[in-house]
Length: 439
Image (cartoon, rainbow, N blue to C red; front, side, top):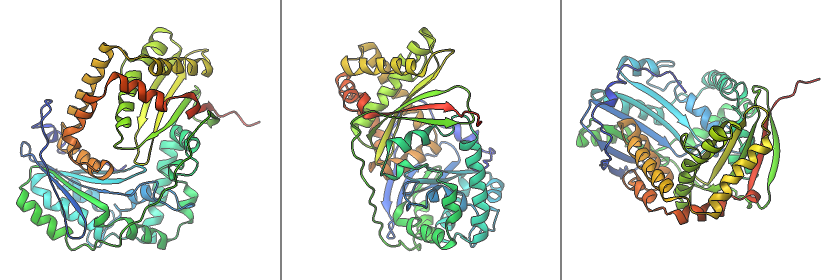
């Protein structure tokens, strides 16, 4: 989202090996409800300070989409004690990097500093939580920033509206039907008071998790956390209700036009379970089986052997309430979208009807091991994983035990889950086409 500074990037790679080791951590709650997770690793003089808020694109009223993503930008404007426009200057001048990102389910802010600047990171994040300046000038400034981001990343980017085309068909009631970035007319129509009320509702200790990971002294860190975050009021309890979707029982077909492309695409998507479901882990393995690497089934068949696809892939996009399992393809030469769709369905049918081979199963297990190790290979990655596991999976220790879930998945289970979710009558099909010239 924002500019980052690389003055200590090389340091963050020190002290980590590719062997899977248990990630030790301590977690507790402050009296105001802030959940704190501490991970000590003194191998390199680097510390990550991160705050994840349980608020994302789905947390909005009809007609007021995009607030969570907007706040990702707005909360870098400044605070009562950080002058407007000085946030990044403070970080970079103290040898740090920082960034933020937003999903449909959460918003994540973090700084990476040399460990002697831990207190600075804690102070800055406490300032963001307690003393942000939310005034019309900042709202207007960031409104233009968000509009430009939308133009660059979505509206004017080839295949940039890929997910929009799917989600608006896959969901009819749930807020996942609308893009995380929101609609610009909603932000334009919102009043300053609405933005301030949004902050008061969601940006509070009881709706957040603070992670401090790296070269720290536990006792001293706890003292600083209490000093900076303990006095922040917890705020009223949140009540969340999201509408449930009716099952998809017959194929839904639609067409989407993108003015930025010349090669069309076929998109298929299935509504699947959310974070933490065992079936979601199985679907991750199915994605790896179908399209992870040149030896994967879809790539080998459609791209390598038959040369019908320019690009092809399968993605299990996990979210808190519902997941989206997406299979897509771009045709090569004169190949039709219908031919691509048939080829994709052939491989899914094989999964539904047959057990995968023992050798393919072993490859999947090896890939799962590699991915698990790589996800915990840096302090910055560990901080993000700890926060995500606590907030969205309700199990912080998954950072150590998640691999056991993958190890326990059987070939029979892969077949069962493919039959449960990946059927033609349970999907949407989108022809993603170049926009026709207007006559």
